[in-house]
Amino acid sequence: MGDFHPGEMMKLYRIRKKMSQEKLAMVINQKSPHLLTYQMQISRIEQGKDHPEEPLRAAIECALGYQIWPNDVHKRTIETSQD
Image (tube, rainbow, N blue to C red; front, side, top):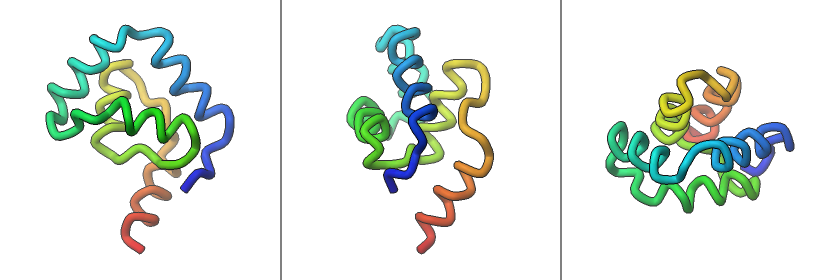
């Protein structure tokens, strides 16, 4: 946890700055309605306290229309959650 490099934090910052919160919320809530606290999760991710869970990561990438996290981040998160 908390080992995102600054470039990954900036990706989230740019996403939030670039897209309206409403649009991102609509896409995330359509794709994964159980992620209603996504803003809290994104804040923790930006602070380096947490990694995005797969559904949140997928919803953000879906909203953007392209992948922003390399596959090794997905794998690292999965391995960490299985420990």
